[in-house]
Image (tube, rainbow, N blue to C red; front, side, top):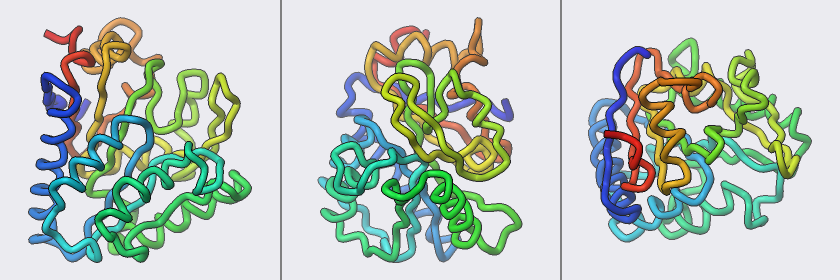
Length: 244
């Protein structure tokens, strides 16, 4: 690991989400003093919804027209589907904060997944930090599943992490639902990566991944290691209960 991760632990999920929203707003404001455009990638799941709602309660003061938002992964469903990561973000964050449509770029989960993974990879190359030789996100948000997966890279498909293309197609091991996901070298090129993890069901794997003990390499979340950036974890008390 290039550097030790920063751990932020809070008594409740709500406290964690509120502090994350506050820290996020301050971080983006600082970045916008130094550069014209900031590049973000959001994840799906339940935990980001709390974060979105805290941002809506205390809207950031920066100009969303200077933000470019992408998605780390997406289920292969219509954007109106209740499981769509984009659909949730649009309902809970983008629309309430009046984020202009030109500021976000969704994964089109309703299209052929292989072609869409290729299209989204090309879009990222074209849109994200075009002045650089490789796309670098300023901030990527990640979650972690009960099985240690992150993005949509699952333990039984951990080799997807090393795929050359920026995005690839994954399959949920239980539902067999297809998903489009960032691969590892795109995630690890980011300037900052933040894990948000809540609940006791994730505590043991979170501790294993953070401490890098036992069989930690079996979990895709352990492969998140920004090679020039910073890794942070935001955890509630339940998720951190196996950490000293």
